[in-house]
Amino acid sequence: MVQPAQCSSSSLTAADIPLRSGPPTREELLVHYPAKFTWTQLKTFVNSGDLGLLKRDRKLQVRYDEWALGVKEEYGSIVNYLTNHRLRWGQPDTLSLLKSSLEVDPLFPVISHPTNGAESTQIPPAYFSCETPSQYISIIQNDWPYSVPAEIEHTLIWTKVPIYHLDLVDESIKSRIDQDGLWGFTGNDSPPPSPSLLPSSIGALSEWGITPDKMIKSALATPEEALLIVRAGKEVHRYVKTRWAESEWETAWFVNPPRLQSVPGLAHIHVFARHK
Image 1: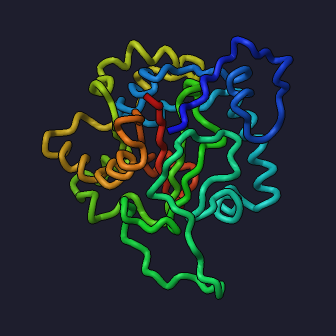
Image 2: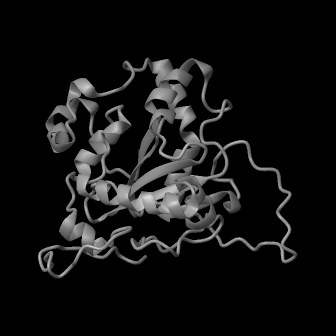
């Protein structure tokens, strides 16, 4: 296994790394957009019940907004840009400036397309799982990552098939999932930070004006509801646990609820991965 590069900003200055436009390089992130969250804080935010706490650096957000205007002018919409350019279904990500150190990826082989150019007639699966054929999946590094430590990889798993599905999401918790989304952790050597620790971490969100009273989350789940929530996210959890071997990687993953989805109509999973 290739070890992640040990990134350090101690030897780099703003003069060494001039700002560009478009998606940032790792060096630009280190020097111009240093992480505002620690790994523990990030896990605390994921486990808080309000996925809206997770933020991109405010200056990087401005850069993204400017870039997005150009993309919309060229492609018509961000969705068109993703589906017609950025997402290479069934193929490795070769476009990202932020490379992953995950070397072995048995679940994501390059697809051999029919030589006659015909589209596959295979019926798409009902929902996302480890068994989903890779022509329905595009795994890329987030070109515009959240404000996470340099050693954390922010990966997006895009899928053409639903993640939320009535076979997984019981009707009794649908409104909760619609508001809160799903999240989980793999490869942890200790339990994820309790939501009760949020008051000690939320200060990292002060520049975004986030305070506990502005959080949006459901009431504490009953034991029965908690089991149904685990069931709703079991396929995503199984996929993440398999792709990022728990002996080597620690992850925090989440799927935004509909209210926070930036690209309606395209399902995707956020995975924050730290090599042990």
